[in-house]
Image (cartoon, rainbow, N blue to C red; front, side):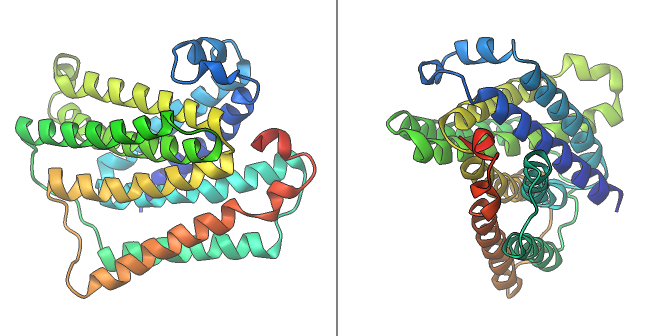
Length: 287
């Protein structure tokens, strides 16, 4: 339960971060896309810095959650970031969430419940070898690279979806590295600064953050969030099983797990199309 509570707090911080970062990127010129100038323009905006502060808070909660539970438990819970984002938009635009929006939240929550109940994830005891991390890195970079290459050929919402997916994959890999760092810290805190996982985590996190800024600049928040929130937990389950030998139920349970993932995706899409995004005052947040 401690891991679950910390994961929910992580999702709340990430939602606040996404809203603030989207607000900051709304006036950044499109010519900054895929350039470090994008970060230079953003770093001078107080709202963006506030979003980074919320992101750091989410990172702290996430690291704590992963020290109590495995990737396959903690990361799927982060899909509640999307409902938190909708609630924040509702408060900031002073509009009420309608029945269809709450129905979408219910569908997403039901999907998460079905997924976790059927998978019944348990932390693994395996310590990944260096070759395991090398293979995982090559696969991650390869998939993310293809997504970014396709995104460069597109504009608008399609680019935002591709970059949001790449960012979600990057954040999932970062979470796997956080898990490794919590293990190293538990064994010998002083050795953390002299081992590769810490610096790999920082690099992976910064690249993922850069991709997220480009996604938010390219399209609306309601386009980016579902891609980000669905990719992260699905990829994290894969990392958890492949790297740490985390256990999830297979066999007949796969049907329910796929049903849970389907409900999460369906709820995310319905939530992204919520009427709140057509209310007066929200266009400046989503454009």
